[in-house]
Image 1 (cartoon, helix red, strand yellow):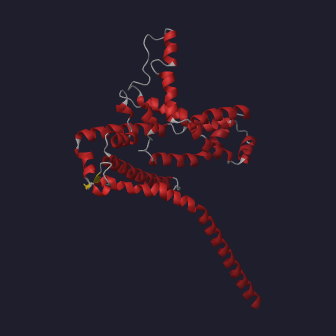
Image 2 (cartoon, one colour):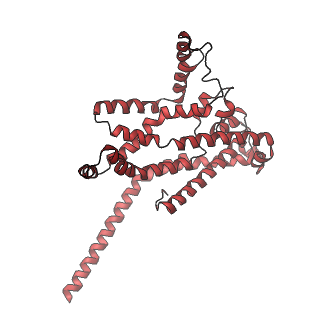
Image 3 (tube, helix red, strand yellow):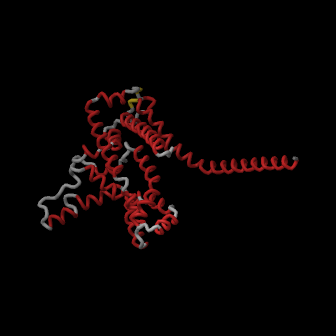
Length: 320
């Protein structure tokens, strides 16, 4: 009886020691992430103090303390002003169109990653991956410089087509409002396709090779291996990226559209982020721009929680 009690006490002591070790390890890990938490607070949450400008009639360089408090004036103006409302409707149409096209083509990096993985020659595989990843590190200013050199009225493409007598007048690729959404989509794909496939290549590298061996033993060909092993293994990663894309439905970025905008295509190229910039910096209405940006952030957070809730109900998995 005494031995049983001693064993029980030893077991309790071991459990306590194990719990203490886990607590110490947890504290060490927490200390490691403290610098990153500080960075997030400084660069992601502290700037939210700027939302207060949406409730003042702020005109730089007058300090905010001397600006007039107007409450919900700028938010009401977004609805009551017909001209402003018409512009916002067009801007939202552009934003929804670009976001929808990006989501519609979000499977292309998956296919590209699968195609790269199927290349058996490592030399060619590395060359293709390098060439398709490099554009991601080129700024949009340089991308526009390339586009201008190739597709402007006096660019390489128009010059060649005229020299070959295929066209009589230069084609207006850049200074035209036709097919603006499609052109922006193609430039975005060219720049981000290779980079977007890296995460899926990492997911493919994590697939157990024994699954492929078992499939080959069962007589599966390469297409069947892709269909029944590779694609199902990539789906969790794809759905996480898809949910993040949907939550950022109102955020198309500004750089690409800013450098490609001109007087001819402004109607269909002005997405919400660019519109906020043009209102704030171009029209010198920082308070109205802040109100727009504030609404966009709130809607994005709501979309993230809605998509997360739907994913949890349908797939049993969520990201937050």
